[in-house]
Length: 212
Image (cartoon, rainbow, N blue to C red; front, side, top):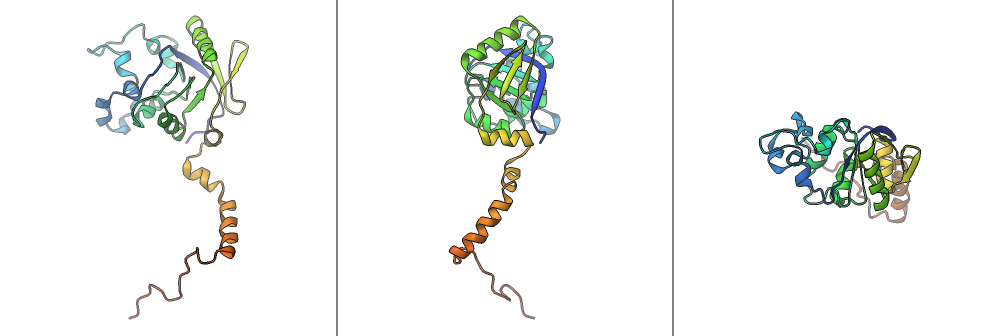
């Protein structure tokens, strides 16, 4: 997984609350192979008419938001079902960070496991970022190490779970973060085997062998 440390990129303002996982990728597109990429289906029914024509005034269809790597939205982004395909659609489109006052819990966890940063901001700061992006073509700089979002000489903080921050900074999945504690785990097993020797299974010599 690609580490996330610092990103300066175009950002798209999505001034909507409660964007759910069914909006992020409608269920009918989930029958397709992930190998095809889900990016073309991101927010499909909000971006396109029923005949497949782009809705010109939808934020993600405008220039330069069309090339955004960052989305700024309102509260409860990623609510709804637990479908990980919602995150796949964002990542396959090219989105590396979503900024919002709150997120669906499962969506946020899935995001981190796919290298997508869910940056939680104060609601007032979120609104200020949306206004800035609506009024200018400013790029945002998201610094995960400092936990700040900067643009036009101003900066706001964002929150993220410390374990998720570590995973994203290093590009780690759940197995990687467990392996990062391998020495501590080995020490615990060694010490615990002295205190509670009956806990650790012992394989008797010759056990399981077949005699010919």
